[in-house]
Image (cartoon, rainbow, N blue to C red; front, side, top):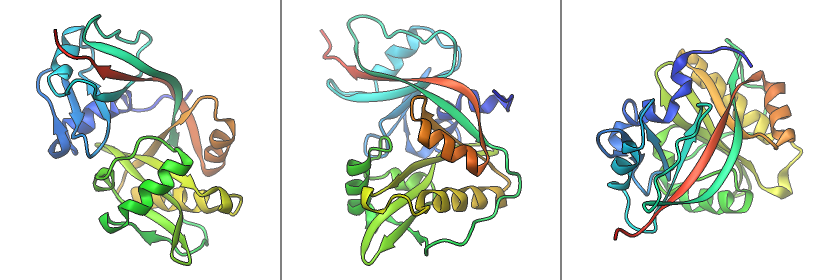
Length: 236
């Protein structure tokens, strides 16, 4: 793994308390995105069990939120307040290209809120990760259309000072193998570099093909993260 800046150890917490605070709910030791923006949440770095109580105040019974943990020990939610519904391991990867440029590619289209229904349909089909109706407000999203159909996309999610997360990279199964995802990611990374930002992303540890594709673009693995989705239980 390469050694990078400490902010990438806490990208969601720093996003929710910084650049994305207008999208945040919560006080004290926990923050989460507004439900129609994202299911992602974060606990304050180094926080103990009391942080789960702060997070619970932002959720209604039955609601699911997902958290990234980069520490060796993942905080366990206290009994009675939460149910763990999903766990996975992913690699955090960081771009090493300090002056990237977009390669010739099919025309890339800037996506807006008017495209959300199509985006959600593509996300449902390809499952690149969580995406809500207002996720598009978190950053710049680009797409590729064939005719009038949106067939590929990529964009930006977490925003930490000096760093921008590449997210929602997906291609319709009928249009894979044409380099669309490669072109989209390169364009997102190049734009971030113009702003003086380093791109990073998260990919499932067992997704070897995606990891190799990102390595070809210049990403290297920085560290492993644990993703935990929890459901808020009804209060007694």
